[in-house]
Image 1 (cartoon, rainbow, N blue to C red):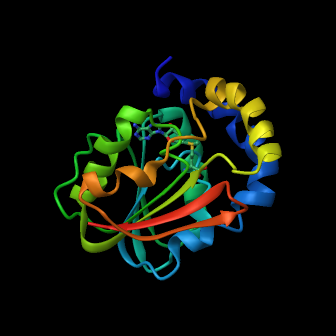
Image 2 (spheres, rainbow, N blue to C red; image 1 turned 30 degrees about the vertical axis):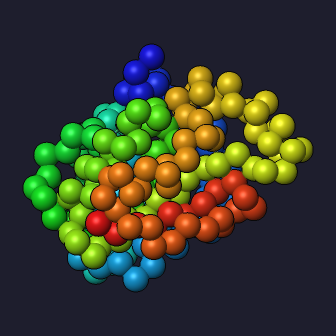
Length: 201
Ligand SMILES: C[S@@+](CC[C@H](N)C(=O)[O-])C[C@H]1O[C@@H](n2cnc3c(N)ncnc32)[C@H](O)[C@@H]1O
C-alpha cells in the first residue's frame, strides 16, 4: 500500500490512536522544534497539524503533506494560531518550492515513514529548499539499545508498519552528509528512542 493510501485510511483515527503518545511523549517535544525560529518555515509531513499550536507567532508557516485527508484535519487546527499558515498537498521528495525558499525546515516523525531508499532524496530536497545556514530540525525514532525496550519495540513494529507505514530503524542521520547537510546536533530527547536531529545545508 502506498504511503498516501495508508494515511488516507488512517487519517480519521490518527489523533485518537496517537493520543496516549501525544500527551505523554510528543507534546513536550514539539515546542523544541520551533524554539528561536522565525521567517518562512516549512513543516514537512504536517499530518493532522499536531505542531500547529506551537508555530512561532512571528513566522510565515507552510505545511506540506502527501495525504489530503491528513491535511483536512490540519485545516481544523489552523485557527489555533495567530500567524499565517499555508497548507499544501505535496510530496517531500518533489516539492514545487524554489531553491532557498525557507529560513528553516522542521519535520516530526516523517522520516520514520519514508522507506530507506527515500531518505536521501527527501533530505536532498530539504537541503535544496532551505536557505544556506538555515536549520533543518527532525524528530525521529530509533530502536532502543536496552534489550527489554528493544524487545517491546520489536513487538510493536508490525502494527506500526501496518497502521502508519513506519519503522524504528530508518537511521536518517546517516544520510545527512550525502544530502549535502552538516550535522549540528543529534541527541536523544526521550530515553534512547526519540532523537532530535539538527542539520544545515
Ligand atoms: C507519522 S505522521 C506525522 C505527522 C506529524 N508531523 C506529527 O508529528 O504528528 C507522517 C505524515 O507524513 C506524511 N507523509 C508520508 N510520506 C510523505 C511524503 N513523501 N511527502 C509528504 N508527506 C508525507 C503522512 O501523510 C503523514 O501525515
